[in-house]
Length: 321
Image (tube, rainbow, N blue to C red):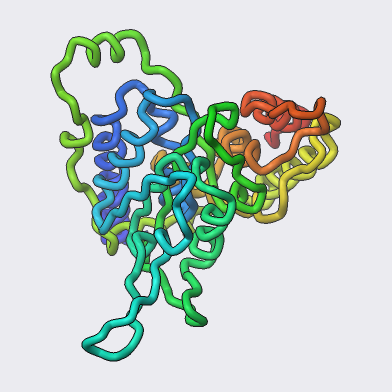
């Protein structure tokens, strides 16, 4: 490798470290959640943040959106939100004597879909094409979305009032599901004693859309040994034969895990994937894509149950030496 290439790599890795530290200014004490969000970002995926209210879901989303620059739009999902409120709508312009498209908030680099599971399934499905193909279909036309395009969605647990469970097709569009949890004692105590109301204001802008695209392209150049690819495939297959799961991980889920492992390696300063990258990401990348075996009628399986089932499947696969 030439000295120019080494210098370029060093500069980019320094930028990744700077980005991580910037987001952690707003969400202290949660390095795992921050890393998972960055893995999805550089893996060209999308993030679903699921937890109880008040633990920093929106804070993480806003901090990440601010740090990567670009245009961010926020949509508060509610039960009466319509697909046109997200995608846009054609209105008649009397001056032009024609219909003009008014683009919705989805035409942005970062879409913050706050409390996505409070919207109806019809509105939730409006995001499917955008998240999968980076485009939307409006009035018989296919319109590309800005590049990069990144969705950060937050949702409350399904047993909270006024929520609609996300369908499997929607969940499958999210590369990773994150649970934040309560902050460590020393961080929470400092928050209780502090007077700063908006910690996101401290977050600097570290990247812009062009540099983000370059870093995403670096993920493609991370080496993935065939033996590790076999290990990843064995994990995916294991979820399909686990008794507690009625539906295992799909091929697309495995492809997402492969790309996320590359992104994690890059974030940790490596140009090659190791077994720990695959092992550490298996649960947050696969658990929201599987379906638990039948329970009693009316019973809603928890996130912890699906994670435990995937963790059991991963444990049954030998780690390559």
